[in-house]
Length: 141
Image (cartoon, rainbow, N blue to C red):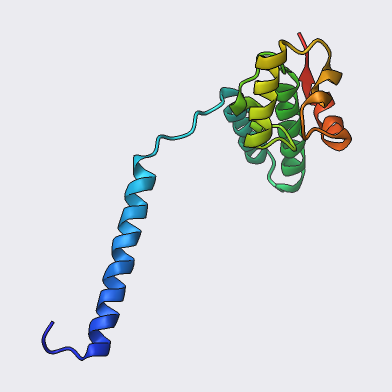
């Protein structure tokens, strides 16, 4: 790198390093598979878009669309059986992260199927508040 001062050489190396790291991050993101798409969520989003297109003012349609989308999402989640749900389904519930989903599945494998929804309280980390959020969204079949 002749013709450049020591400070200019360092700046060039810094920029090239930043570019290289950015290229690696881009390559990593491109190589990861896309997450699975839930057809019911797509249908709820399309209903939301149609409601926005129908109303010229935008305010009424937006309110109706958000309400219908929330009802659709709640209906989808309300059908979730805690005995057959996989970790990916459980993570979508409020207050349930990846660790808690693994605990629920592990508890189910260790102790058998949940007989009542109240048995969910036996899983470590599910307290009264989390349980109260989950009750309307889960069923035991």
